Length: 200
Image (cartoon, rainbow, N blue to C red; front, side):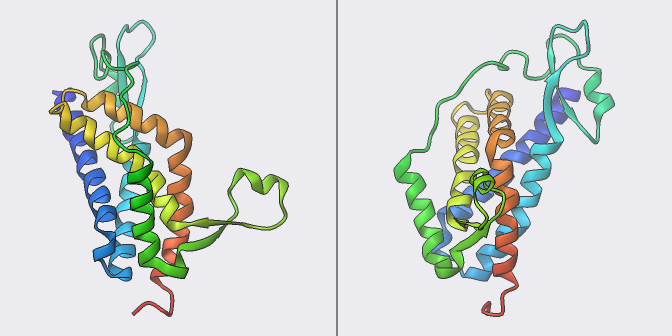
């Protein structure tokens, strides 16, 4: 079934998100190059999945909603009423993260990276009003991505998969709204750290 195929793929996204969250939680135990390398491998995969699997309205005349994947669009066009995610399209799930957890994740990464944590950002909205780059931090950017992914994984885990589609829809809305840009921005900074002459 098409729905089973998409559900399997979404569980793959859960796996990527889980690995990302675990690596951030254990950042204090890692070496810099190991940690940064794992981020450079994971983040592009996460970006591709959240960009590729896009919730969208079904074709005109269909009452249901569907999900579209750019590499299998014809399959998802065939979903009709009662298609994937119809029941959970408008449901909102609470957050499993708080300021204490966020600060803990951020501080672990900041402690690991030291002075390499700070980078100059040119894609901040405030840049419209400034001629100079604005300082940003890798640790804050990664923690910003951690929050929606941790919520996504936690919702799926606690519902035993029942809210998989709804949790993905919510996480992807946040991806579009803000954390996709954070992900793209921090990749450049991580790349610089990884290939820095100071790396051992």
